[in-house]
Image (cartoon, rainbow, N blue to C red; front, side, top):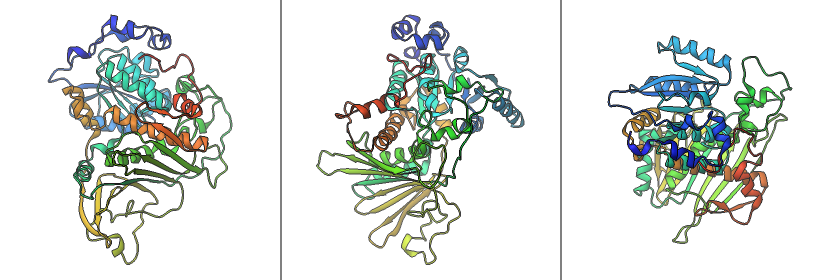
Length: 472
């Protein structure tokens, strides 16, 4: 690692002035003053996975396949989950990693090179900032932040401390998708004027959950972290936290952030000028706060006066499949949408992917594997180029940790922040019940203090000492 990645004690103390919450959380500034370990040409990158109940175990399995990575530690606030994962790791034939329930203790370990964060959304940005300050590189799951402001703070921390920070929008590492997006940018469809993201994902009701004692082995104060400390229920805990505003961002921020990111990538654009989202929580009487059906529109004003449009839609129940997404026929050049006599073969109720529209035709990407693109041209939708090939997002991250070449990251945090920010803009529009006008240069809502508050702290603030710092 280069000298610019080292964090001197003087630099940390200057940066941390006035941010007592961070110092407290990391047991004093000395914990952050240690320089990053220098990874030699023959060294393996030592990684700690934070949060291993769900997606985090995919991180464990992913790094196990990367020759230059070593699973050094696991961290989870549920000791029952930790014990289960240790048993599974032993069966995988891997060396037993260290374990912690508190990331603050883990970040004091100067032998760790990187952390891989797969916790609930409300922890992502703060943990990422702490890790950057502690000299660790970061893989952070999507969305990288729970609101727009804290995502911007994470970007600043990555830049200030010279860290490699990869966002968990892993579709960007698919070889087929990278090829398809390049073809879009080269003009395969002409000037792409609209991109559409689909999140048609079967979601049953979560029901009602009663207040109960915190389960044995669960460190609930740590789990709650920056959010308000509420009474424990199963619908505020494992997985169902996605549907509560204090911790999650609904399916728009859960699955949909991938498709928003893909749509924006295909258009080659950043933040929009106007955002509208309408929908609701249909069919069920349960504890879910976030919408289960949502339509989002992001409008871009272009220098040539011809606006571009990004659409995104969440559907939670019985639905159709658009552009063969979610069917085995996607990517089969012999099966055009108009040429199917018996309709699409539906083996999965989900349709997860993207569609891009240009004057020459359209392109579809995705299905559950997200490694396929297909194209159709002209009014009769004649099949065009298609490809199916995956990639390894974890390997890309480890390669960049070793090389220190930020430009080689497939999903650098700046891109992740922008896509996550669009999730927050749409959710703010939905919650306020109106269109939000946005300044992409200042990254602020225009003449809308209520929207700014939602974008700043999600209308819930931060609970000490788990506070995202004003100065990183």
